[in-house]
Image (cartoon, rainbow, N blue to C red; front, top):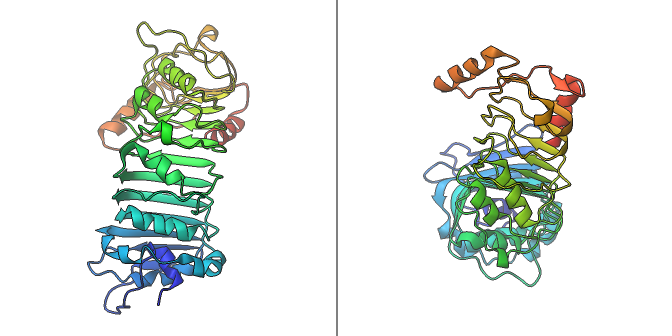
Length: 372
């Protein structure tokens, strides 16, 4: 008998219950979050039954291949539509497994009957080609899709193929540690309502990779673009990539990149007129970079290596400027950060109360909201 909890097990049939092995799943006392980690050589998949009542579910497969469960991938989940709809599930994380593309698609079809809003894939290897998409998307109506360290057998076509299985309405897309961000733009459908794109933690991306990832005219509603630790080097090259893709973000996060103040022989670039918030914190800057947008609401230059206060002619017209954690404010901060780096501890930039235009408390609140 096929059971609905298989939805939480990548549509796998329930296996025998074994009392000899520890429970791989744990449900909190509020029945809100359920976490499964199937690391045992002979995992008891049926332990995930308890996750049926949870709102937030995380399932990790212990790095094993799930290919032997392909026989259940063709099961018709439509007969369980009402039961799946009744599940409280809103956020689902799947990770640490080798998943055949056919099995992944079967999961998406079943989730199409659910009220799932946030889906995360982590440390997955998707094997084999994706099947042809249906004429009308049958997967879930997600608001947020996050992928970290996910590899696909289909190369740069993976995002377009995945998107065609999802119902319209995706607003937030996060892709980290990607194996390929050179998307096949011609086959990529337009993200009509996507407002937030986060390509952070892709250190090999660089400006050239950014141009390949930002397919022209595919992100018409984009408001926030995050590129933390993404191999960006100069503001001019990032500006050129945005212009080439016709992207008009309001918020741009370039923190945690080793930025150069300017590139030799760089040509001027016109920033999107919509851009109002720019983060350049933790960028190793020893001076204010040239080529900044002429007007900003928020500019974050905190936790850099500025040895003096910026001159007015070096800055754009800006309402809220944050300079905390620079050596000219705290001469010992730079040495403290270097000492932490050499000891293997990730340096934390202690924010001071210095802001220009607003109080320190208000600046911190506005900064957190701008790049959330």
